[in-house]
Image 1: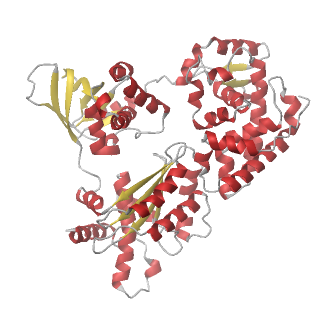
Image 2: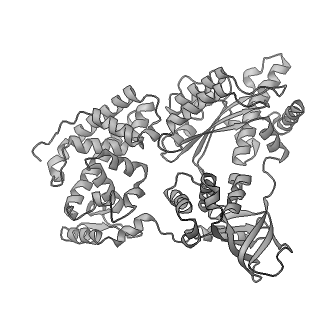
Image 3: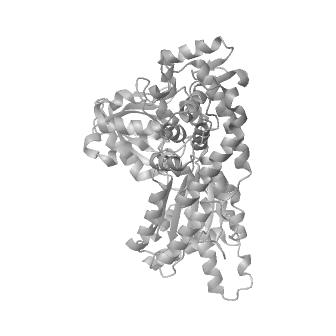
Length: 561
């Protein structure tokens, strides 16, 4: 049967990509079977990308990098919308047997290392043409890297080969899940081809508790749904569930972790704390089961899609996997609106409006701290405007700063580099609870508005100087400068010997040299001690950053301050 599946996949690729895949490097090859296998190997990478992104095969023909000196990377694609860099390796097995060898896996890992270090000069021209894609991902601290192994074999990757890639990915994910592996074998690829790639519409039966409905002007139902049922939606359909949504599930979000924690610690309160889920469906019909009783009812939903609440659904799934027994009986509010046509303007309005309503973020609760108003009032006397509420108008930057800039300046001046790491990794954590650390370590009665303004001015100069220096760097050194910005600012503050009473004018002349020294030392230490670490992940790791900090030469440039 596996041979039949391979032939069907091959037929699909030939039908859709014949004449579209670049085979110019094999133009003189007389061996027809060899040329065909190259075509299928390259076409397979577009099938993998089409399956993972739900876009047409032909969208990815230009992303093929397979050829001599490809470093084991057969295709490269960066989705700016989802902030995902896909690095693909493909293996075509005519007989449908096998998977991927250890040699091929090690070559792939080596190629990935060079790609994310921007060390691509030794690669072929196809890889170099994807430089913009690569830079778009590696310079973005929020981008994810998806490693993809696609093969037409029916066998699983053996444990020895799998351990190589798992070990490498684990090193990159020591602070957060920045890199993941997708393995698409013959079975998955055949299913993708069978479904026509775009996939069939999602049809689900939704059991609503305490339900109600609207008949005019649009048909809609609402009620509570068991968390276990919602988790099954995601298990079965994955990101396709959010096809009509403005964004996919963002697993690294602070808000998502809060949702997961609530479900695991206080499942009974989840319904009270969560805003719920909005979905649309092309048809919405109640099943006879349950009659007209509103205690419970099951609705048959065809063409079902979540348009608001992707983070809620994904977080429910994550919590359910951890403890299905504890979370399964929790409920969440769900409303489903019938949209008869995919292109119904009203359906687009539902998606847009449910995703653009005002939301309250953690920084908004900082406005409840009276210390913030004290700081603002203290600065008025100096003609400086400080805004700590979201949406406040910005004034002249020479006489204005806001909560975010104040937080970063205080974090970079804190004795503990871990606070600066938090400012880089997840600044929202510094505003988690205005009654305790780390927020109180920064904003408290001992810190005055004028002192913060002096730090902000110093931070701005350090940031400008570092940016100028980093622009002139290349490859991995530049990556270190970009992703290590907060750490470098912290190290520069230490070299400047900043105290709470230091005035900007006292240290401004020393900022260029101290910033340069800090950047040079940080790059040197990372190259020596963490050459295999991806900078975007490294500078979010508390333990590693503290180890680097301990190696820096902190020789105060302003000992009299």
